[in-house]
Image (cartoon, helix red, strand yellow):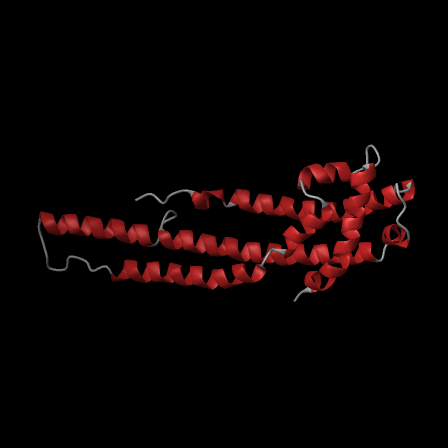
Amino acid sequence: MDRLDQVLDSATPLLRRAEDVLELTGAPPGHPVWDHLRHVRLMPADAVRAVAGLRPAAMSEAEPELRADARVCVEAAAALPPPGEWEGEAADAYDDQRRRAAAHLAGGDDSLDERFEATADLAAALHQWMTRTRDNLAAALTEVLTSAEAFTLTASASFPPTSAETEAAANLSSHVLRTIADDYAEAEDLLEGSRHLADPIPL
């Protein structure tokens, strides 16, 4: 259990309260929360639950397995026997195929071992990003739980909500959504830089 798990249950009712206010009144015109809602495309509580669903441990477990697969490719390439004393056209054809297979397995930019290593690097980077994203959100939720906006939203529940409650809901939601949006922008850059991993390896 990390910091996000510890604070999630306490923060969720407050986020739902903020959502209820915004659904009744809307945010003030021009408030930054509108941009964050368009970017994240989730209301605060659902956006927080999406981050809470990130599992860094899965990436951490995948990395050594991928690096082990890369080593298997290198070992397999090295184990392919040369023709030895075998000579002639058939031997030459075999050796050509052996070299091609070895290059496919290991050593080149498009080889299997390099693809496994690059994927392991991505898994490591995603592990770091998920851990950092969860920590950042936990810090943001801790801040909103002790904020003046939280007091305004929980001290009373007017119907319809007052302008102070509307402003508090918008400010609180904006802070949480901005934190999530900033971290997800980093993930988009990371995945964009790894898009080539989805391309087939030439044979």
